[in-house]
Image (tube, rainbow, N blue to C red; front, side, top):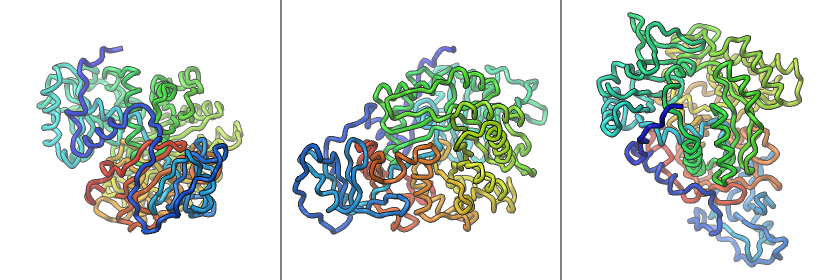
Length: 599
């Protein structure tokens, strides 16, 4: 293990703009899970005043918490709209009118007058990387818009980091909109004496300076790894740009490892950010290393989990399979964490999408795994009885994944394995039918259209754009759709932006991509609650507001069903409850895009 850096890049020095405000808000929430002991004051948004409350229930029958005088969007099978909900022992005790729940109010019952606000089931983010969000906030220099929009802006920001970091120590950063991927010639002038490693926010491209290449021993003679590309100039020399995790790992292995305490701090740090966005359950779909898996469950046992979560252990290389089978235990926490299964990455982002037909990216015909090796690994993990999810952007990646699932299920016909495909940016109509037949869940992020929709036509061609994230087709054909943020690989981590992306499907230039695939707000919300609960085998305990389910609830400052569409992505969350306990209160707008141009 390499020596830890002697100086960690501080949040105060390197977080900028709204990110700095967000970091402060998150840290202020503390590490321990809060206890909801005070009745919050909510400013009414309706003129209705409920009748005076007279506690009548005896202590043994009284409920713990009542939310009343609101619009309770239950997302039950009938899409029932109620007025009040009662919570006892962390579960939903009653749903109905104010009059229905009033008899359950006792002397010790906490009562919240919603003032007409909407309450939905707690939002379930079915695809994100919570620990990495905390990692970026603490260890990486943010090189993000609006402050950083060019190579020159990036160089200026890195110069600040160089001035505050001892020579020889690594400087890491993450970027989004620089116009192109930076190379070593961009990085060397500003940081000749520090190894530099920058990651494009999507997580599948990286850039290194010459010193970092030297530390890693990467030269013109270094071959491309299977499933990855080292970019080279006309003379065959590495430019410092790496495509796909397989190539990026050639350099990342030389970056000093983070301590278990660092990882636990990352997990604790990121949770209040999710809670403030209304998220009550997260699925971390890229947990690399059993030590990171263990950190999640250690955090739970220490009582420092604020929200619920489940994790998927990522197999990056074939050699990871034996370790996954031998070392990954069925971890137990303190009730808020669950070990869900395993994750593969079968291709990269758009430029490295594994497709049936050529595209104009870097490589179109290169899965990150050898197809037969991949199928054998899927079969072995299927036999564990756990769930598998596979990152697929290109249509060939989707089909190879379905082939692997089908072969594993035929060899060992487990009941309802409910394997998943993550992202599923491109797929054929035949693949949609196969997903339905195999019971495969699609976990997708329609806000990607905002992020990449203006560029994708130059990569995929106009014809394939009609097959981008076909959410309407999936629903109509009976495929379960789950929604997630993919935070921090997108600039927006709020469910509001995800919902808006599913409903609007607009690019940055405001061009709609496949308008026939737009969902209604109701359909999108169901996908972000019940669909995501189903994706995690939890539809019986969460995802809707029904008696007996977990009291995981999100209180919105506006009704997402009736708010103007252009306001959907701006609606703050007033309160988030997990098991009936308030884990966030107060409409936090720092998480939301600051202006229309940001979304």
